[in-house]
Length: 222
Image (cartoon, one colour):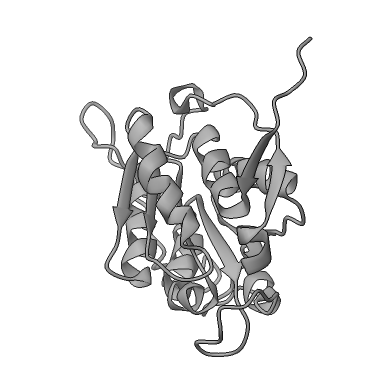
């Protein structure tokens, strides 16, 4: 057996490569320090795979709502930002949970309330683990502590999102995003080999219509 090949990569690039290898083909994002290297990486990497799509949205709000559309169609999709940008996404993240849609959101945290600064911090723990937006929901939160965990937990995030039909937060920080470590990547997953999703909105030709909604007016049902 051959020894797995180690690759020296920056943390934000590691997340991007792991996402692509996990079958992510749609990335929507907006620049913000200290995670700019992730959309930069995805903008090039997704041109190299079949059906890859990168869109630099006009805002964080646009990014998360594009995520909703791609998730409804059954795609493995991702966005990323840093603390104040994630705050802007909170309504969309809560809406993903209400719609029961799988998606991955990466937060490379920065310090301070409000706009904060661009230094690494771990200040978004309660926002991530206690919901973040309005409503009765929780996100699945994965917090990598090493470069290799960035690989492993990014891949796990997509699997958990699909399994539980719920958004998953990868909670890293500016230091993790900028730090370089040797990592080992698994083989690429072909999205076409993933289990079928019988709830997706892909056009009702030849089958009954499907409905995805979060507006449930009956309180016990909600």
